[in-house]
Length: 259
Image 1 (spheres, rainbow, N blue to C red):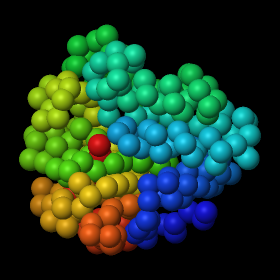
Image 2: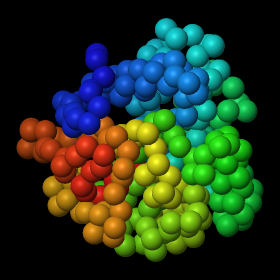
Image 3: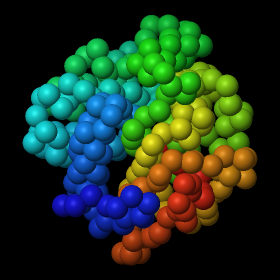
């Protein structure tokens, strides 16, 4: 299945169809980046339903490029719960079990938090690891960020009306009062989301339809995603696919939507 064109909203009838298209988009973006001057591909992943979707589809989509291509991937995580990697809530732990065992990205190029540190130190440690991986970038510039959207409109661990939405200096922030458990998390901040070359928001299921229809605007807080945006959607309500908020060239209007 062909990947959706950049800048378009794509609606799918099922998570399976969405997953196949998403995997093709990742593979195509990787190939384009690896053929460019930087000759690497930096991917940021979110958790939730995206884990099973990518685990099911991405290994096959990336396989034709071969191991030499995957050796030039750099993988980070858009947010992470401060729990051991063996815990069922660990985003990296789930990807390690279900995806990375079948997608041979070198361990040294998979950037993770240290879950044994206190949350403030874990955020600082993760920020330092990102700066080392993105040397030369004042703010880490991911080639592709895949974000989800929660029923309340949150993305990463950036929740509506939370003070972290105002963070402009840090690239990674700790959160100790997450409205969604577990309460302690580490998250990329909006400057990193805004710096990414491509941002994809993915939402599935009826539970996400209401918040998207409400159009809870992140830009009411002066926030605009400035990256090229591709939105993939699989939302069913009354048997019909609903639509996302308006996506415009160079930004989108609506919640900086993740699971």
